[in-house]
Image (cartoon, rainbow over all chains, first blue to last red; front, top):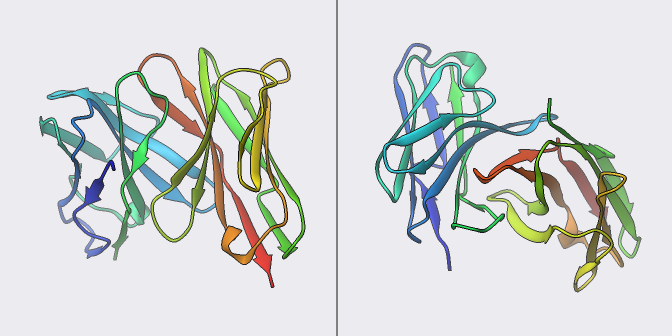
Length: 112
Length: 111
């Protein structure tokens, strides 16, 4: 079974803090993705990576950066958290040649 | 601009009812259309459709794709309270594996 884990289920941070969200997958997938999910807006792609040290911007990258130093780990960084980044963050990975993505349980981030 | 639109956005039915969820899309370089179910945790995969007119079925759930009219439907027959969830439609575009998601349909099944 594919397993995608995220470091925290719930996180509360203050405005201006630097926030790290970690995602780890155990199936040697090359492609990994970070989404945020907001009511009425569905999932929106922030960044994705198709290999170690490779990254591409998604649809809403502003205010975020990512790091992929090892194949199994994809980190999302909020350089200076703001209240409009309060959201559910979902990580996913995809095996090569497959359309399907496997999701982690999500991190619900609240920025106060 | 690529977009995926789901309807209705929310739906309340009673156990035993049949529901149809809709997903229309305008996406360049279409590869596949996927349906996911999301309860209070990670979205779980239901179906992936790549060819028009071929129904995919799993128990009480079924789905079909129309690539000419650019839409898909997800049917759930004899609904149960355990079907209550958000149903997500996503379209795969290009070679990168990117998925473009719709807003989701929130289904509530009452006993």
